[in-house]
Image 1 (cartoon, one colour):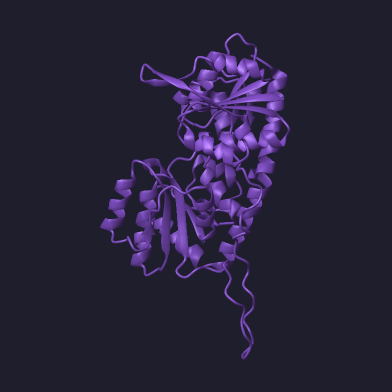
Image 2 (cartoon, helix red, strand yellow; image 1 turned 180 degrees about the horizontal axis):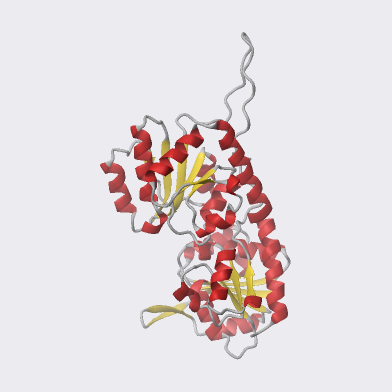
Length: 377
């Protein structure tokens, strides 16, 4: 098929991040692509180029009108000249502008839904198909009267099939050497000294990073040695810095800022444990980032976590906004080598089978074929 992908927004939230793996998956399945991206989304344009998709990218110029960004008036012509079988609008603006541009064209326009909020879901009502990332999201769309026949579950996935470098999950310990024998050399997969825990994401209240900082403070009071790195940026950066300083944690809690693709891989490879203390994750790419490197995951029961870790043995659960319970969970995992190793191996296996590029391409291709067969509503 020929497929046009439209992304007008310039942010790098979960919906926007999905553009790259979606495009790679479609390319892998042999589809012809047109990727229309705002000229203001320079980070995304650069990332698409790095992943070998530069030849498919067309940059949309824009105008400012009524305090909101609109694509160039030629959006309709650009798409019609490409003559796609389907158009996929990413995020609210990508869908709305693609749908407006293609009125009367007969080309089905679908969208990837990245929210559980009823009001926002309603803005996608005119689509010809909806790609939901979880079963709960599909149920929410159905409850709002969306045509169930046109709702397809396509879980998020990453643009890689295997970790770089190799699997990070700890292996079971070898037996102790006999007296006089030399023991095995320390491995990168052993628990580090001090142990390293970490998280990443946008610094906004709903991500719950303050709960993680408070948990680290409790662990320090208990005499548990560790280092914690929280990568990311956002409007809560100053608040988080102040929280770290007030608790005297600046030597063990690090805030390195946003990480590029390779820096993120190095960061995750250097962790012993990944912690998500978020209050709201409609899906959560951060889980997949951690699972790809075989990291054991401690998480709150967000919508995304409940879907991804539906088998409760694949993650360690902790309640929302409970620093004490979070500290307990971290401490228990750091002291239980067998449990930590098992969670890491299960995490890595789950990523490979359900959320890698290969797995995502299969799910996405099936959904696109069904939408194409259904046509316009």
